Image (cartoon, helix red, strand yellow):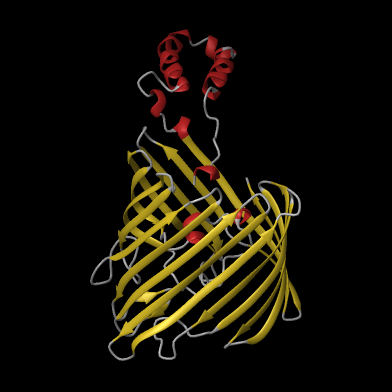
Length: 369
């Protein structure tokens, strides 16, 4: 996360403005009150001896992201822009820090046709070395993509997330408490244990009978290679509203995920698969599978051609997911005008149960500011 930050330089600006103010004719005539207020302004402008290194203004980092798209699909050309992401980190003390992420995006139900979503709000406590406690709304550490990339498309290897994300195959966020560690020992071992509100719950209360549990481990045996597995367990209450869909019966869900990622100097590979076991009293246990494979090759420092294959398969008696078996192949290219200004062009061939075979060509400009 630390690589996605930007420092606003608030320091010393107050002193510059103060010097201009003191030399103005109006202020020179007010000698009585300026002798009183001057020390206060100096303390505020410099951060104050009592504030020191813990000043929030001196340690708050802000970054913004947005993308603009043009596409050709269904015999028509469309233009639009996606999410505008505001990403904030703040080092409060040597052990406490905060991460916040708010997204502004299109919302047809809003009077202005745009809405605000709090994607993450995390208080982190570093209790020892590379081990931390996290409290708040966070990305569920269930696979590499969800745990690594935030909403800034400029960092995505492809234009959009793999199809298991828009299909709501995995829980994207969990509000709760987590323990995490990374880069431990010779294998650079890492772990995540997250306990929080389950599916169908809100960010302020749990709707399910029990909390959801996510457990994940990974290793980095060689440079740029990461191998990980995870497990998710939840019991979804009947009548729960999950991703704008009412679940009619109680569903006990277990998710098993495996990930392999390698982003070297030339070759890029990312593949993940998730097995979802959804059990109900009426349909038994349904087996659902979602996977994708991404591969790219860096021809130059700026140019990367790539492809991605997605596959979604659902059990015949599935009641939690929307059963829409899907296969997709994407051929694309990525060009770095600048590390924070990336152009992407993709051709996608899609085959779904709902729409049959379709194709689309999409061009994206993604940037950070």
